[in-house]
Every structure is written in structure tokens, then in C-alpha cells.
Image (cartoon, rainbow, N blue to C red; front, side, top):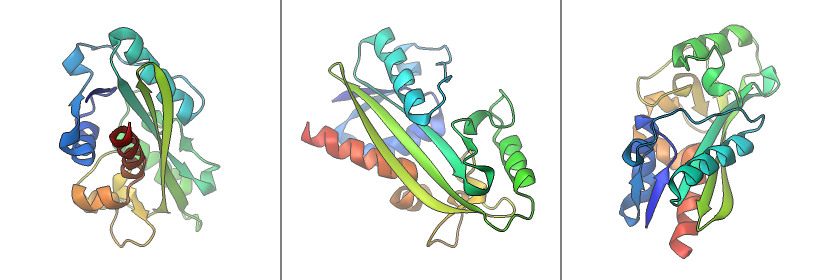
Length: 191
């Protein structure tokens, strides 16, 4: 089965290919000549994922899935949430986003957080949603060089390393994205 992943983010594409395995042919936006940025203007993670999938489906007519992910921090009332990628500005600067989170948290004791991914799938013109959540904590400074986004400051519960300190295979056993994509993969294999 061929699916378009509504992304040009090389980190995400590599991560998703490793999760889906050889059962599917995965195409990026680049592969189908969609070069423009997909609008991400919705107020909820679910709505953003659906909007991105619809945008690509309407442009290509192909089976497509899109994801949206947010880091939700309890002490910041759920921020950065749906604004995670642009938390420190439109440039989507991960380092600036991390610095802003750490500055806002300061010495706050409650550093409980969760990553939440929602995948919207449009398959044969029908829409489906899949969600994955991982709970953890925001550490006081960056650790690790793997991964992307907030990975250097997020440590999942039950682990001693941040996502950025884990190899991709280890991260894929516990991550929010892996949990959501596992649900997607199970659905597709039974479809």
C-alpha cells in the first residue's frame, strides 16, 4: 500500500519509516511535488492533523496521513501544546523553543509533562484518527543529541535518559509518535 506522509521533516520521515516497516511505501510531500507549507492554524492538535491531511488529499487525491504533536506541560497550563513548533516564533527554532520552556518553568518543582501525537488518516476518502501519549518530566537543562524538537529536555517516566539520549530504536519503544503509529499500522494491516 502506498501512503503519503504529509511532511517534509526528514527526522519524522526516518522515524515513521522505521515504525511502519516494509509493508508500506511511504511518500513525502517532496516525493509528490507539494512544496508549499501546509497551514497549521487550528486551535487543537486533532484539528491541525485533520486539516493537514485534507490539504494533501485535496492536492493529490492519494491516501494520506498527517500528524500533529504537542508538548503539554502541567505547570504551564498545557503550553506549548498546539503551538509547540512555533512556541518561540515563526522560525520553528527548536533551541529557542527549549530555552523559552526552561525560562518559563524556572525553578518550578512540578515539571510533569506529556507528549501527545494525533494522526489523521484519509484512506479511500474516509477519515480516521489515532492518538499516542507518553508522560514524563521536563529536566532542568538539555541532554543528548539524538531526536529533534523538545527531545533534549523530555524524560519519559520509567527512563533515566531523555529522548535525545536514546537511539531511535529505543525511543520507538516508548514515544508518543510510536504509540500513535502503532495504532495506525495495526489498522492498516487489518484494512
